[in-house]
Structure formats: C-alpha cells, structure tokens
Amino acid sequence: MALSLKYLCVLVLAVWLGLFLALQEAQAADPDPLQDFCVADTAASITVNGYPCKPAEKLTTEDFFFDGLIKEKIVDPNLSPLKSTITFGLAKHWPALNTQGLSLVRLDLAPGGVVVPHTHALATEVIHVLEGEIYTGFITNDNQLYAKTVRKGESFIFPRALQHFQLNVGKGHAVSVNFLNSQNPGIQFSTSSLFKSGILPAVLAKSFNISDQEVADLSAKITIPKGP
Ligand SMILES: *[C@@H]1O[C@H](CO)[C@@H](O)[C@H](O)[C@H]1NC(C)=O
Image (cartoon, rainbow, N blue to C red; front, side, top):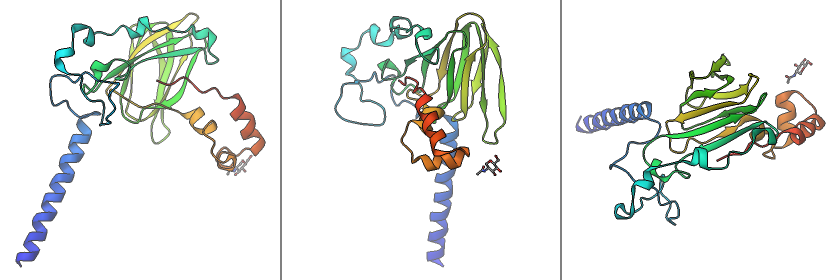
C-alpha cells in the first residue's frame, strides 16, 4: 500500500513536471533572462546555451547600440543570383541580444528577387515592409498556404518553424525589417538543404519522382543562399 502510494506520488510529480515544461515551451521561444542583461562575449572559449556575459564593468552604451543593418555592407541584390540579400542582426552580430530572446534581419530584394523557402526551427517571425511589394506567406503542416502581397508599412507573421518565403513582385526595390523571437532563430533553406547537402541522389530521385540525372542537373543549378 505504502509502495503504491509512493508510485502515485512519483506519477503525479512527473505529470506536473511534464505540464510545467510544456507550458514553459508554449510561452517563449528562448528561455527568459535571469538578469537585466548578458551582453555576449562572443570570443569566450567556453560554450554554454547562448554566450557567456561580458563583465558589466566593461560595458558602455555602445554595447546596446546596433547599426549593423545599415553599416554592414548591404550587397546590391542585383549582384546575387537570387537577386536578394539578407543582412542578419542576431546575437552573434549584436552581442546585446544574448539572453533577450529576439533578433532582427533586413531583406533587400531587387525586382524579381526571392528569399527561397526556409524555416526557423527556433523562432516565430514578423516581416514589416519598409519599401515595395513583397509576395510572402507560409505553409502549414497540412500543406495549407497562407500568402499575399504585403506592401510598404504592412506586416505579416510566420508562425514558428513553418516554411515561408519572400518574392519581390513590385517594379522597384523592396526592403523589409523582420523581427524574430529568438536571439539565434536558426535558418534552413529548403532548396539547398536538400540539393546541396550531399544526400544520396536516390533519396531525392525517389522523393521528387525524377531521375538521378535530373537530381544532378537541379543540384548544379541551385544557389546556396548566404546564411548568418
Ligand atoms: C511518378 O509519376 C508518375 C506519373 O508520371 C506516377 O504514376 C507515379 O506514381 C509517381 N511515383 C511517385 C513515387 O510519386
């Protein structure tokens, strides 16, 4: 009797812990900070979940400021095969984001430019269009597409981990700033992850119902987008 009661207690505790963790999971992409800030020491040799903190006495206002989305060389998107450039503002580019649970990127799209379908396993994303017209959207786990043309001043959300994309459908340049609720959202481009990873061609031939030669032809054509 005493033994089964003990097991019951363990079971209740395990269920409670599971629920607690599940709720935690649903509330935030990144864990909450345990202090005001933890500006990353990106050169530290120890590895932790995120980055270790720079000593507070060494910080200045400049540590909390970031001009990487304008200062960093924004390559002419016309020069890239996909006619797009992605400029990243993640924790490794802006150390003050460490432990704060967010990051941002800037997209520059020449007319016809595309950001190929991709996922962020660790973050939900909002796109805010600053210039131009971008056809954008996401695909659910049931292959349902939610997509539309989003214009200057408008925003759209890509739920966490779902595949999404951007295409400049306007006549001029398109620019957006996108916000993600992780300091390090992760990015996996669907095209290059499949066709540039070196998977045995038979996997892709069967999956896409094409020949090994067609797999080779496609692999040769696909550009690997520049990651963070
Ligand atoms: C490949 O395509 C053919 C039609 O061209 C179809 O009959 C066949 O079922 C497809 N196979 C796979 C594995 O999708």
